[in-house]
Length: 119
Length: 116
Image (cartoon, rainbow over all chains, first blue to last red; front, side, top):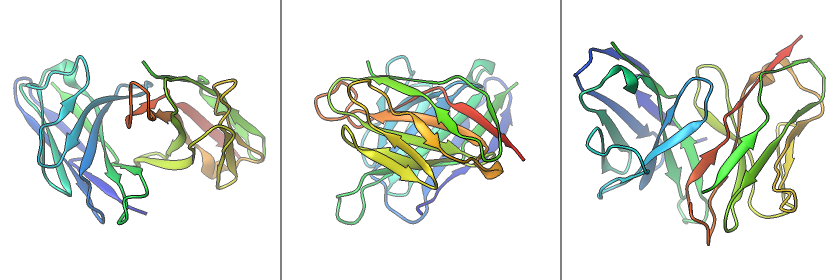
């Protein structure tokens, strides 16, 4: 099946620094990608929808200036956590939407996640 | 808004036992329903889905039926294996006419551990 990769798989950074997380669809083109945040023993919370070539759509309560999303190509979306603080420590998961060659299917494939720890 | 509530875990079973993980939802419009599985160290994988009322999704011995009258999508398997140990997420994708069209809303996840 389709594969979505994330890099890095884990990162530790100092408070006040910025961290970039990459999400790639490896064998399909994704015009739409999604970024989720998962707290321990809790559900995935949708942060934003990333559309290739246009601005991301953020969910209510998510600071767009803190969580910068860039979807510059059909296979790559990036999430940058700016001026990170300890409360930003979490597990960040991306997914990519595969509409199939004929546009008749609609499947989301998920990356393995990135563990961010802010000291 | 849309929401998904699933059975709290963790669930611990012996191999070959019967599994049920309950999932109920609230949604406007006509959502599609999903079960995802997350094995240790891996990303979420689609396990099965159902797109309309009374549809039954099935895969790898797991089944779930879309029950509109009870707004449920319970996951079942007749005989679990050690390799089924994972975290299971129930989810819905908002359908046409709903407030969350096209977006996935997840339950909190249920940890399943199967012992030999």
